[in-house]
Image 1 (cartoon, helix red, strand yellow):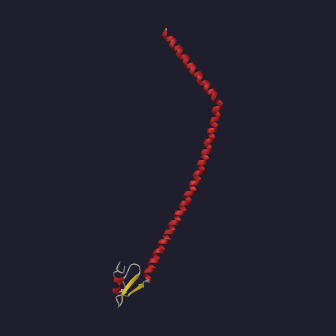
Image 2 (cartoon, rainbow, N blue to C red):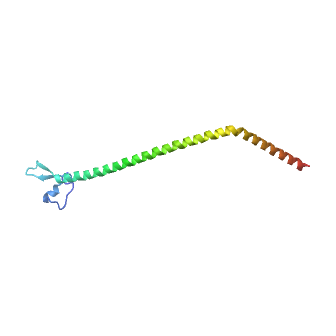
Amino acid sequence: MAANSHRVGSSYGAAASYRSRDGLSTRPVGAAEEIQLRIDPLDLDDEITGLHRQVRRLKHVAEEIGTEVKNQKNFLEELQMTMIKAQAGVKNNLRRLNKSIIQSGSNHIIHVILFALVCFFVVYLWSKMFRK
């Protein structure tokens, strides 16, 4: 972990080879069993600042998504109301149409039957005239 990423041109001189990207650094000490860790507050501050920026961006995106969801919800509610009104109009018109068919439907059937009888009679007379 100590030599994961090296920073070239660092202000730490020879200790730069021991810097990790997490803001921790190790320094060689006299005895081989001892390791001294030092947390670099500048790196942590940079990381925290970067995370803070990302959180602000994500918050902004979440607010935009929330606004879009509200707009979509309002649109769908308006569409649903329009569909309900259209269905009521169609149902009302069908009711009127059925009423008018029931009231004048028997007259239509009589007219169709009379038309068929007249056509049949004309064809019958025509066939009699051309047989002679």
